[in-house]
Image (cartoon, rainbow, N blue to C red):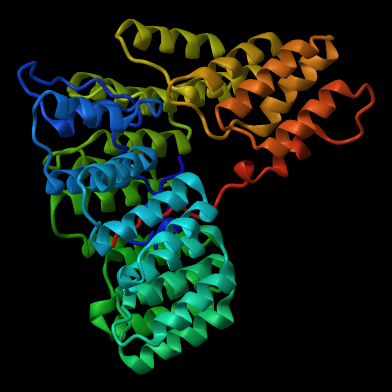
Length: 494
């Protein structure tokens, strides 16, 4: 199961670890009926169609106070768990209703959110509207990150040059640019900028990890090993992430023994809070599974599951690791542990088994499995139905595939990216049986739910209407930027 480590600038995205989402899986929490707060109301409102402005207005109409500090905490949590649209609504409500100019830190955050939710053009328009007195380095840094996220190198470099003229430019700003160069494979530019940082003596642990990650990404094992020696000479630059990154490179290069050595070194450096340990152990579970070492997976699990305030994410990591080892029986046993121990329903965990059953063609077992959770009151998300759609498509049961795809599109928590081969197979099937009306209804739904772009909709509409199309269906989707997965999602902080 693909995971992501959430660092300040996602410098460790190649480790493929993920933390639990902020109610994005629509969990059922056992709250006391007497507890109520603005934070709880917002956190429970996971449906993206719910307006945060209305919720805040209603709170005020009840005569309840709203503190800026509380809104800051709420925005931080919403951003952390990727509810960017809701975070932007809260930020805009704060600026519209609290009748004073936002501090520069809030401006930087709103700029970042506009870029994520509304696109770069809207972020640039917002930046242009900001008073000149508020365009400080922090705000320019936020704009730089917007350009970096969207891959606009020239615009990012122009902002970087402006910031380099400021004596207050931070190492974080440099690291954003380094990360962009790494992501786009511009290693010569990366090296030049890092040399500048060395001359200024401002390299930090993230700087070194970006460079190490660049070696790992290109599988330059010799270069990575030399650079790792340099990092080890600077003890402050080495932590558990360092060796985990190296282990990940060895795994990709097929060097399992060297990967095992790095994982052992990484494990010896794990310390700190329960949360820090949990994230580290989740990474190790995934990588031990990648080299096929089941005993080490279970050994790490024995430490991981007993951490204070352990979360659903550890079960996601463990079950995902066992499924990677094709140990479905073991995964089912861990799921039984979760069922007996959990305090928060989380559809991601059943989804893991549903995915495994569907891939193996055990559709009846997957259906029975889901029915059990439906009876317990757990609500499937779009991804759940998408898993079934993929499974039925592999079994060539196109009627059920179309049914599941429609359910995936219509789910409250919609899927932003359906498998293009499954979606194209549905449209081909409907067109082939002469049901162009249903095919058009399906792509209309996709467009309304933001799953495909206007351009892709137009191409698909023409495909459905054309009696002799000569373009591969999947190409219509693969040309759509919505179907091009980014190198790594960003979780930024100012």
